[in-house]
Length: 157
Image 1 (tube, rainbow, N blue to C red):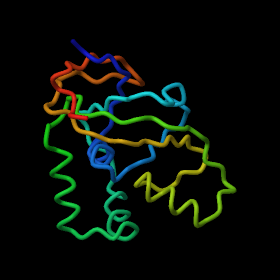
Image 2 (image 1 turned 135 degrees about the horizontal axis):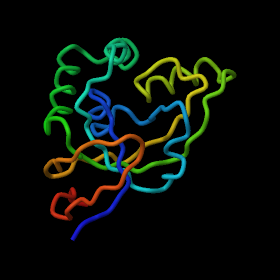
Image 3 (image 1 turned 120 degrees about the vertical axis):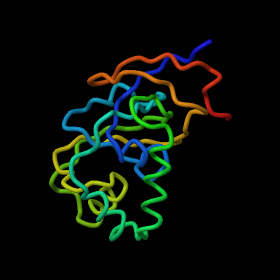
Image 4 (image 1 turned 180 degrees about the vertical axis):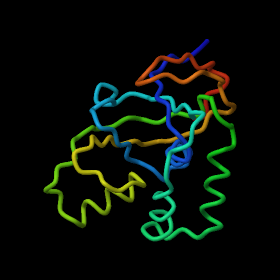
């Protein structure tokens, strides 16, 4: 038996940040995840890394993480390697981040997204992240695609 769910590829380190619960807001230039609201989404770890390391400054200065904590987080995110479906999250509301968001609220959104420059991007709330018991090797695709996850790989409730 399998669980059929929508799947989205994330570059590292963001895939690991999502599945380890550090990143709870996903950002896109279009409302890609809006149709997935109240659904489970599989997280695929792409072969390529995110370009740039602004996330490191956010983890250090905005979230107060030490160098050791960051390295542990990165190791956790790499536990299954690349080119795999690694876990699941629940998809919440999607909205466009306008340029009139109060500064304090914008800083909180940036911490949750582990990213700056959110104005005019579509933000989607993610919750209940969980790693699969084992990775499911799969080639990534553009946008949302469908994956069949064997039930024996699903995390315990």
